[in-house]
Amino acid sequence: MQKDSNSGAPGTHSPRLRRRRGSNEVPGEVVKANGAHMLVDDRNKYKSMLIRLYSTLWMIGGFAFIIYMGHLYIWAMIVVIQIFMAKELFNLLRKAHEDKQLPGFRLLNWHFFFTALLYVYGRILSQRLVNTVTSDKFLYKLVSKLIKYHMVTCYFLYIAGFMWFILTLKKRRYKYQFGQYAWTHMILIVVFTQSSFTVANIFEGIFWFLLPASLIVINDIAAYIFGFFFGKTPLIKLSPKKTWEGFIGASVTTIISAFLLANIFGRFGWLTCPRKDLSTGWLDCDPGPLFKPDYFTVPEWFPSWFPWREISVLPVQWHAVWLGLFASIIAPFGGFFASGFKRAFKIKDFGDSIPGHGGMTDRMDCQMVMAVFAYIYHQSFVAPQNLSVEMILDQIVMNLNFEEQQLLYSKLGQIIQDKMFGES
Image 1 (cartoon, rainbow, N blue to C red):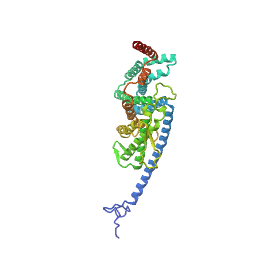
Image 2 (tube, rainbow, N blue to C red):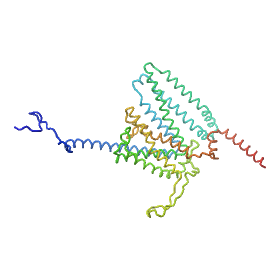
Image 3 (tube, helix red, strand yellow):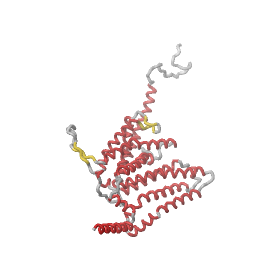
Image 4 (spheres, helix red, strand yellow):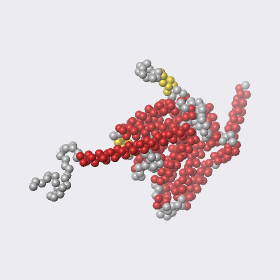
């Protein structure tokens, strides 16, 4: 009996799949197995995309509503975001078995957090609070006293936390406790440094908060879509899902969106007016030259189907292009930094508070970089560098209390009278 060339040892029936040397054919069983695996991956990919899309629409809707409500509500949203970020970052180095041996130690982190919250926002918003209660004498005196002792109050709150930390030190827990102490302070620096710039942008005019934040969102969505459908070339090892196709497509989309959105946002006075107090009413002000349109006639050689013969461009749109460039080219490095950070701690996301996106920190990594740049750009290239009557009045209202303003008024009146009599 002739032995089958594909059989194993005599008496066994274990056929082997063999390929001809140099052949490109793939066995059918392998194709079938791989095909089923790819189908599962494909379904998971689209399921993940739908979850991400659903949560993105909810976030955009909620964000738009808060923007409509005004400056104070946006600031409250920033505080809520900070609390979520701090919670995620505190948990990153937390060890449950160590915390069980240190009752109340976790509460100390939040003591430092709210002390920093009081200090930072007290410094930024104190004079705006005074301007809000000027008409009520009792509230005005109370707020003035609180502001006068604001710094010393925050200092002693911090010292109380410092003493609390020292008194809770335990043997064989020193390294963990001092590590948590240093980690807490690093979190406060990261979270509150960028937030101070963000809040400053809000009160300079919602436009300077809304446009940079929107550009980061647009860049993120565009990078995801372009990468999802066209991504083939890896961009950076720190973030394997990022591709050059997504990066380039998102950059072009973000820069175009910056130019167009600036024209839309710049036409609403309540977005462009700065807020000098903490009231919630609608604002109406002179928008300034940046938000007054320049008109350009369309050349005759333009195609006849082009619907406009004249185009209006706000000067602020040229500034928006620079914001768009930063949001598309440099701000993503905040995301790369966060990716490297997560790899160092061997985690996929900072949290799970936003379905399909991860935690709040995962969404805010690029926003932190962008907020700082937007503030520095505004102060360097947009805010007037020379003193004007409006700027001096703003400084008087923001930095002098009511009695000091009255004293300045009487002294200035006396100086003007002396000059008038001297000239006559």
